[in-house]
Structures are given as structure tokens and as C-alpha cells.
Length: 379
Image (tube, rainbow, N blue to C red; front, top):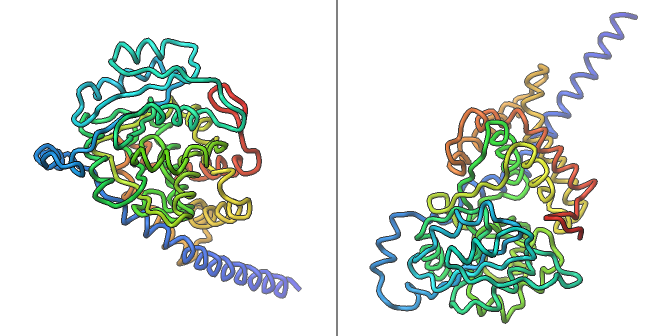
């Protein structure tokens, strides 16, 4: 009886082991195309292009007139670092700060930095704050090309000129720019890197050519003003809390070309202050609630659990399969591949696979209990 019980247990465990291996293999086949797209990346915006831009001559394709639009709500502590590099920046015709009903000194700091301040109007029904602020900034922009920046960005002075020229050369109607991320602590870098990797696994984040399921980086976008105005871009995505993703997907669904450029040499972003702010801030939008169907969200959560989160812990508890080893190597490959996205990647960055499960929980929380509150507003 004991021998038979032990034999049955062994057979059962063996069957579960094979089922796990097959499940891992299927999951790997599903996630591999996304990782491949991300690994190829987008066009790199490099400092070496600056001389080409400066010497390119007066033709309009090389020398577009640029308006920079910055939506800002209570950004007095961060805004000046965004604006200072733009003073006299090559090709920049105007810098517009849309003061989105701030209660601090955002407008005063913007004026002192030489920006044109647009006093934001009350939020219309059905609109989300950031896209409404962008709409107001685009309305008063007079440049051929609009470059949008968030207040927490730290642009190189040559960024607007280089990114505008890259857009015109690419033939895309819209491009978003992937930055270099700056974090404030080892713990925040650890969590931030795990969260970023979850986007790579779920959507191929960082890929150059956008697809209908792409993600985007609304911290820096570039487009022709006429395209945005005539196409009523802001109005189309007015109710989305992840307006950048919504806009990219709307345009790609129309058959238009959208790209993501690698701006890690010309743009730095400090999104959050500390690990708690990272969890609350990025966790709010990480699941892309409202843009992905719930079935897609849950499917991606399951896929990420199998391919990104589980392999390390299967190894720890001693039941890995050969596919587990492959998945671990793939995870380490993504870690090597995304290191350029961080300003001074330290030990927190390299330990980020340990907290992949925390990033996964943030995604799951966003799916099951999505937040519609941001910047003091409830949507």
C-alpha cells in the first residue's frame, strides 16, 4: 500500500512537471515576439546628430519651427529644471506652459523662466486633466512642430531640434520618446525597473514601430501641429487617463505610422520620489486599464506571471524545468537590455527580478481595482 501510494505520488508529480514545462514553453512562444520587438528598439536620438542638425541648412525639413508645450499642475518644485535647458534652445520658437489650475507658484516660475503661460480653463465634462491642458497648449502654439514635455523631464537643449527632425525624416505622424530614468533610492530603482520590465513583457515597450497594442511615453511627444488640430487628436482621447497610449493606438488603428524614439542620451526623467510614490504613481496606470480589454489584461497578467515572475521562484523551491532555465536567461537578457534606460543603474536595478512579483501585483491591482484619481481629481 505504501509503495503504491508513493508510486502514484511520483506519477502525479511527474505529470505536473511535464504540464508545467509545456505551459512554460507555450508562454515563452507567446511572449518572445514582444521581447524581440523591444530588443530591436527605436531610432536613437544622439548628441552626435547635433552637428548635422546645426549644419543642415535652412530648408524646412531640417529646420522646423518648434513650439514646446508643457502641461503643469502644481509643479513649482520641478518645473524650473525642465524649463532652464530650453532657454534659447535651437529651433524652439516658443515654450508654452499650461498652468492647469495650480494652487502653487507654477505660473510665476514659468514666467520667470521666460515661458508663455496659458492660464488653464476649468476641466470640461468628459475630459481628463492632462489631455485638456495639452489641447489648450496646442491651440495657442504657432510652430510647425509641437514637442510636448512633462514637468518632470530634464531635456537636453538640443532635444527639441533633434526629435523634430527625426520625426520629419521618419515619415511618422507622431513619435514618443523613451527617456533615461532617474530614481531617488535603491529600493525605488528596484521597483521601477521591475515595473518597466512588466511593460516589456506585456506590450514590447521600447519598440520603434508602434502596433495596435503598443504602449507609449507621453512624457515627451512630437508631432506636426496641423495633424493634431485637423485630426482632433486630443478630443479623440479626452476621457483616457493614459492618453499617450490611447492616442498611439487610435492613430495606428487608422493605419498611420507612429514610432518611439530612444532619447536616453537627450532626455532624463525623474518620475517619482521614493518607492512609495513609485508604487502609487505608476501602479495607477501600469495595467493600462481602459485601453486593454479585461480579457487581454488578465491574459497578459497570467503570461507575465508564467514567464517573468515564476521562473526565479521555481528555481528557489527546487522544481525548475529546462524551460524555466531558458526563461531565467531571457529575464537576465532583458535586465542587460534595459540598463541604458537608467541613470546610474545600481544594485537596486540588478536586483529588480527579485521584486518582479511586486510589480505583477501592481498590475493585478490595477486590473481588479483601477484607480480613477490623479492630481487631486476624481475621474
